[in-house]
Image (cartoon, rainbow, N blue to C red; front, side):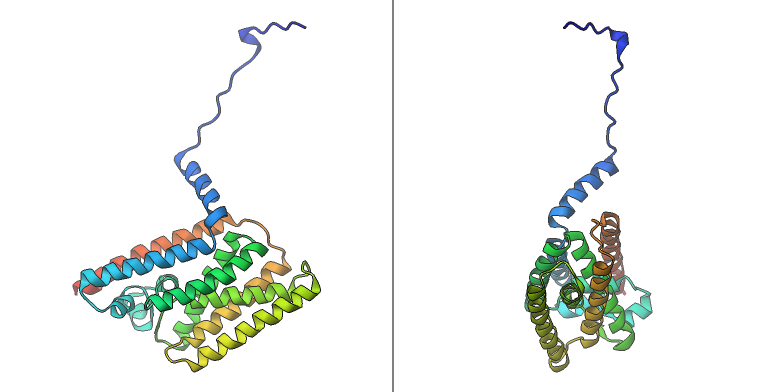
Length: 255
């Protein structure tokens, strides 16, 4: 069979070129689906720690003091400067390598479990929202100075408990076993929060309650979407908060 095609018989429409922002979003979507949960949380915490080391060395001041005037949930500084962005930055700073290591172990264990149940972006958002709410609770109740990822870690803990308590998609025996294990971990950590000195027990409880409620919401409404744009907004908020914190600490150190 022979078919003759003439130039006027068809039109060639070239594919539309993606703009820079569209290409950027496509790349970010791919990266966030692979590394957007546990690895992003750990990466941000390490970046903040490195910035703190460099900042304290450049300013020639004590490391903990630099954290307090730079990005911690410091009630007096937040009130003085209206620097409420610290409710975000405070969840990524750590007062020493042991503090950083222990929190990152918690993030990795709990976050990796939840990534298998939901997806990486949802895990990041649970950590992020729980961390903010835990810092807000500590700010208004304790009115002190705190920092660290533990509020978000307790949020992941609470979310895991909600999943194995309310989800109907898990085999009952395994579900009961996991719920008991997670509840045991929660009880131990809550007790330690009250016993150990210099622990922000209000922040821990705030993160735990936030995580339980977020987990319940996700399970009950069967949220399985990637929630990319909410994830993207959270990253923008972190970057903006980091920039504002650097500007403010420069002002404070120059006084």
